[in-house]
Image (cartoon, rainbow, N blue to C red; front, top):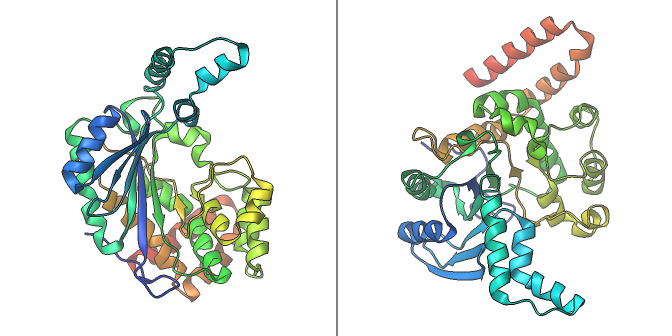
Length: 332
């Protein structure tokens, strides 16, 4: 069953939506496209051999790509032929294709394909499971299939508001629940040790959870960039902050690949596509607890105060107190 968060409408009063990105290996890009069209219809459009689209499905447009920027750029820009012209050598296009295939073959054990789903309303999240089931049946491989697979599932829930007070409250709720979220998602060890979901620095966490922290949107973005000049956070705020003030973000992170959008970019869950008991819905339902805490009024304020007291207490006392609060939170 798909759980619903407290706020179902966006800043314009329309139903909020959620996008989804899933990384996995074991299937070719053309096989993946055929599964998308089998589930949802649509027409194929190709940007390169390693990035393609399925347009006009019953849910919207899908993007399927090898998640390796270098290879995509080479395929799109005719890289080897350009190099040949610079040094005065004519490079046959067939040789470029051979080189690309060799690179792709070398990369496949480590670099996944990524399917980006179109944003859907929360009531449509169950429809996304149709493709997950199809990929599983065709033996797609997820995070646990190899020690080299640090694959993830990314959820992109649209924000309910562009008010910095609301955005801050959702970030605070995530930070308060971070340890619980890690346990609930059963994060794979390989993903823990790679930099893709590095935790927020402790000084930044304490700054954001301080009750007197009330920045405007510019201050909120600047503080984030000062402490997190990277996309590699379990809750990546850069797409949202770029959507709110792209110039401010680009001045600081001009080289980062950031797609502005009015959504939280939640990167924590594994991609367990090869587990028949796993589902997108299960991971979404965990995220919903962040939204429930964000909208809990006095409860989130009380948890902030409790969290910030931990340095004044022995570790054992802090842990016991915190876990009691967590149990109380989820029993209500």
